[in-house]
Image (cartoon, rainbow, N blue to C red; front, side, top):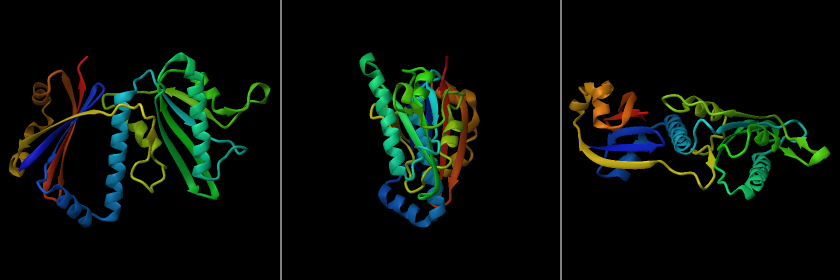
Length: 256
């Protein structure tokens, strides 16, 4: 069986996928979607969206950057997502205006959480990942309207440093995506200057029997000898009953 080894470089992090390489890819994918229940498709879409978001964060931000939580008080509470989009876009414009003369490139990722149905006591708030071009106080202060004595906060604003561990910021991604709108598989947006992870792919030959006995899947020494300059963190192997194939996933981090 032909498999594909896919290496996804995200800053100092490296993810390796060893997955089936279908000869008739589109036909196999269509068959998989037909046999998969809507609930399972939704779970898979959600998982893939979070994973892509995590990879983009790892590739563009570090521990000097911030996670912003932005809420609305009752005076400025938007009734719809469209109203909230206008407000958050104005906030982004205020940040860019403040940075205009500094010659620095603002990067951000935006996730909007919606609780309740639109028009029925809906509560909306935002999460942003931003680079450290402004101070915490500046990011928080700009979540406001008016100037001088007429300046009023739109709601609660809090900026915290990103806290990375060996597997990145997966807990943060799960937290900020917990109440997003489920109409679309992609639940986040970002600035156009975000750098996508670098990907390398190559074909390898593996049989199902060999994979079932693939005892090296969790062997730190094997993978560190195979991928020079990286340290093994974790791995998993999963069997897809619909296509009858195994999927292997590994996480590594660049050695200091």
